[in-house]
Image (cartoon, rainbow, N blue to C red; front, side):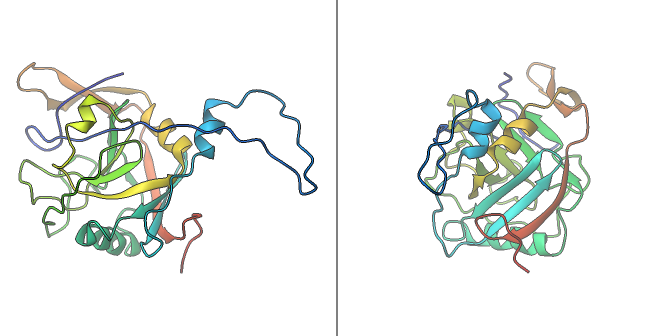
Length: 233
């Protein structure tokens, strides 16, 4: 597990994490006959079974397609309307297609939304912060930024765990959504092998941040969907 209080940009730019419970459910047939369980539920099965409650049925949903599985998010327009609308607009124009999760820190967060894959990419506008009392936890979707509170653009991060490190981000970054289903895919991406990134060096310790994936992790496409992940045309 790596814990790093360092976030994106030329100098010190911060990003994020969370933790979630897992449920076990017995399956039944249509005639109320219990199906025999062939063995204990695996971690992957348990994560795949998680479904986070929808906050507001009027909010829009998006689904991210990756080589590790799909992830469906509710966008919290009721909390951060400018950020949610921006993400939908960029999604509909294909901005996020074939980009990468270029920064991954186990037990902390995965970061994407940069077409250059360097942590410096953005569009021609910035979003004013829309801060709330929502906590950073597993599945939290929030916008990355520089040291300027109102410098968010297109780069986003998804939290992997709730801990002392990520809780320190509460109230400082705009949370604009949450993962509804696809926790197994998030876990797989968050667990990929990484190496120190020579372009992200901690000025205090002189150490490179161990966050660069050994193998490229692609975000193949993002589309507007329903809460079940079905595309809405």
